[in-house]
Every structure is written in C-alpha cells, then in structure tokens.
Image 1 (cartoon, each protein chain N blue to C red):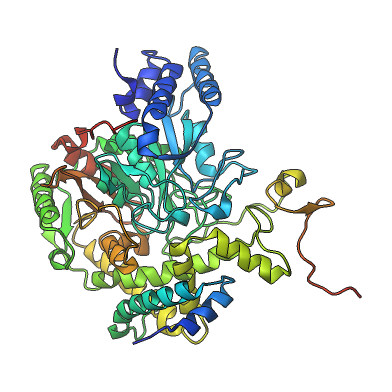
Image 2: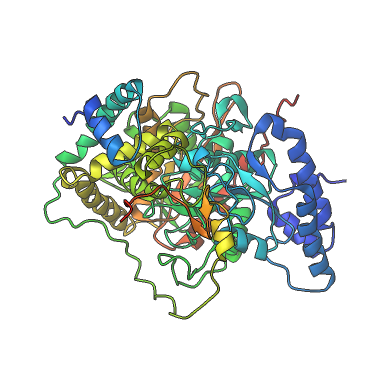
Length: 97
Length: 494
C-alpha cells in the first residue's frame, strides 16, 4: 500500500509551491495515505492492451488565423497586484550584469 | 396578483412575450425576494446592483415593445455559479485566491445568457474551485439547503441549486466535473442537467479538471433546463473542445414521445455500500413510473462502474494540480509574500487556497510525479477507457441508464472536519457520466422519510449528444409525477 509520510507531503508541497504547517503535514499525510489506499483498487484491473482514454469527439477545426480585437493593456493589467511602466512587476529573478 | 417568482422560466418567457407582465416587474420581484431571504439562505456570493438589474430588464421590455425577436430566456432572472467569468462583476470561484477580482472580459456563458434575454442577478455560492460535494469548502458563508438549515445544499454548485429551489433565481448555471450540477440538484429537489462534454463551451468557466468539466443548467422543471441549454449550447471558437455538431431544438425534444425507450439498470450498482434504503425505495418507485410512461426497464451490466470514484479522483486531482498552477499572485488576485519570486508563489498559494484545494493539489502532484505517473495517472486513464467502454456496450441494449443521483437523501452540515474520502464516495453514481463525457440529468423523484423529508433525485444518463432523448424521457417522468411541484418552506429570516 502506498504510504505518504509527513516528509513526502513536504516534498509534494514544495513541488506545488505550497507551505504546510507541521499540523497540516500530519493531517494531509494521513488523509492522502487513506485516499491512495482506496485508489489502489485500480491495481487489480487488467489493463493489458487497454489504451489511455481519448475523447470520442472529432477534432474541432482551428480558428482562422486572422487579427482580431485583443484585451487592452490597461484592462489586462487592472487585476495585477503590482504594475510598473505598463507591465506586471515581479521580484527580480536575474542578477544585475 | 401572481407571485412572479413562483413561475417557471418558461412561463416567464412566454408571459413576457405575450405582454402579460413586464420584465421590470419580474426582475423586481426576484430582486426583492433575494433581498428578503438571502440573509438566511446565502445562495449568492455577489449580487448585481438593483439599478443594473432594472436597466437590463428595461432593455428586454424595449425590445419587445419594438417588436424585436426575443430569445429563449427573455426576461428570465438567471443566477450564475461564481465559476463563470463575468466582466466587471466579482468572480471568486469561491476562493480567497480570486477575492476582489473583476474580470476584464465576459465569458461565453454570461454572454449567451444575456443574448438570450436572461437577466443576470448575480454569482452563486460554491465549493472553492468546484472541489467538493457540500459547498462547505469555502472561506465564505456556506449556502443553506432550502429544505433544512441543518443540511447542506450539496456541491459544488450548491448555490445554483439552492437559488432555484428557494426562487432567488428562476434558472441558474452550474458546472459539473463529477456530479456538481446533479448532486446539489438532487439534494435541493430541482432539475439539473450535465450536457455531453463539449456541448457547452468551457471558455470563461474557470478550469478545475479540463477533460471532465462541463457547464449546464438547473431549473424547477425539465422544460426550464431545456430552454436554458438551448441558450448556452453550441460551438464556441474560444474553446477548442466545444463541439461543432448542430444544436437540436431541445424544447421540441421535451414534447417528443418517450414510450418505447429502453431504460437500463445496473442492479449490481444498487448493492454497493452507502446507498440509503429510502433512496433505493424511491429509485425502485421511479422505475415503475418510467414503465407507466411506456418505457421498458432492462438489466444492464457495467463491470467497471465500481472503479469510478478511484479513477475519477486520480484524474481530476491531476488535472487540478496542473490547472491551478496558474494561480501565482502575479497577474490577478491578491499577492502575498516578500522576497524572491518563489517565496511570492508559496505565500500567495498558501494564503489563497483552502484545505480541500491544497489536498487535491498535493494528491494531483503525487500521481503526476515521474515515478508515480504510470502507477496512478496512466493506469487511471486506461481504466477510464474501460468505464467508457462499459457505457458503449450498455447502450447497445438500452437508450438510457437510470441510477439514483445521490446515494443519500441529505447531508448534514459538518460540525467537525469531514473525512474527505467519505464525501468523495457520495459521488458514486455521478462520476461515470463525466469520465465517459455523457449527458445526464437529475430530477426530483421522492422525499426521505425523516423530518424534514429531504429530496431524492433520479438520474438518467444518455449516449453522447442524446440530450433530446434524455429530455423526452425526463419530461415524460415529470408529467407522471408531482415531486417537482413541491416547494421548500420559507427560510427563517431575521
């Protein structure tokens, strides 16, 4: 049976860019272990030669590649918490040259 | 004078078209009712201001006065689950992550409802990012079940179902990823329809699990959901998965004969633990009604149906973990944290997401890890094929499949934190239609024996794009029953 301990939960939280308190780690570890135990029933299924699910719907045609109206910059930026010089401002990710 | 909020959407649209009453009168009646009972019901997260509601109503009255053709929702007050993007109207998806966000564009659903003559009253309560079956997974006030303040309205479209039931909206839109339209419809005693995957656009519907999500209508009767589906169905260039198939006349389908249809029942599914005896009894009674309608009930087998919950929760959590990666606090929504970019991501997502969303993101992240992918996600996607094939084989011998919608007649409000797996299992009858992309409807089919007696729902599932068959059978069932005419008690206000 798959078991997730608190350290595994921490790793998942790191990958998902979340922070967990020690109490959350314990609770989530227990719950996820229970859920994965339930899901392990899928292991008993013979999936030999069974393909992954694909929608039976035929592919839809792509949109015509032609210019059209776009969201105005001011409208697009209106929801951002930090804006500078008409762009979304974020913490620096590159060191100065 | 008739209480306009007691009318069906179809009666409103016809009355408006015939000039029996004005749209302003209708909109005012619903607006005032909302103002009166919302403090007790909490079906809305955001309401459209009264002057805007009246302005929209006057525009439809003017269109009628000028002799212009009116749409199928002419003058019908509509509530939208808060998952639907509405320009300049707060859209939170039930989450602190989007609190205060005013979308810069109108989603397809709000636009089509408005173009069909609907009057949008506001945005309805839901589980955060549509993850839940009780509408309790939210930092905001939990919507009440109109039938019992001690019970939840279901979820995740709990506000959409409660609003229809309590008449704070005439019809509503919800989203259904694993039963989120049908289960709350069942628990609140209204009709809810999940269309075929792709029948309704997903553009402007905030993504949870993209291969499963589908928008659909809720109403007090089959004709109301058919009318609303008519307004929102059809290809949308903004959604590459929306279908190009022509949209049938759904209102005409409601009048089509249902006699002779074969209804399949998987008896083994009724023996699974968790199905309440009173729900089982109501379901057996519903089968007798379908027979009275001239339909034939036949036994079918779906050998992989019991794997649905395990398969569904792996896939939906995987897709949710991917979809919700976009919430980084940079382009919209609140931003938290100081320091480097990674810290902003972590602080924003930690503050913005609630426990159930975090749980599903963690689970989804786990099943998508390179060393776990084949064991969990890859296997679930193969089992999904088997589940879908079960439906294909069943529909070789029947036209529709009947099941209970919810295995229980009511879910009590949680006094402590719920066991998440226990609540997941309550989706046992609904997830299959999402996994296979099939249309399904829930309609009132009885009440529990307790006090108060809580609504029980019948689910019918149809082959892909067979909404007309589904509606014909549902309308026939409704014509032979009176469950849909029962109304909940007035909420205790004050």
